[in-house]
Image (cartoon, rainbow, N blue to C red; front, side):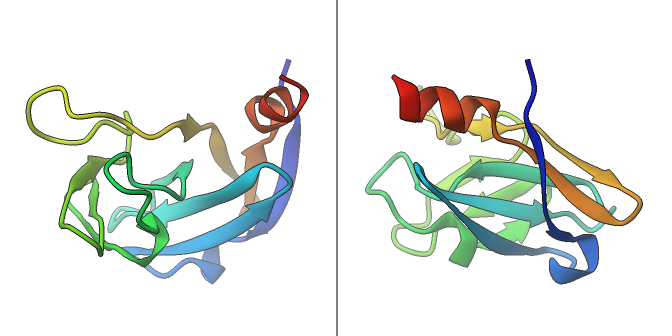
Length: 111
């Protein structure tokens, strides 16, 4: 079951940039690629919890600003040998608005 919520305009996220959304269970980083594709990940690097929303977005990935770990925006996996991942979230663009699925966030709060 999905729980879509409007979290802002696509225009609020710069190309090759990010925007942070605060939720009751932690922050989610929304990323916008050069091709306007949008991705959502927990705003925590799997290495040391660095703020991915402050990282550099490039080639479908984000580089953590703390220790340069590179995270795939589609899977949330860090590049390299099985070094960890951050949780991804469903996000869609509807009429220029960013719709984030809060169902996983709500489940985390309940659990």
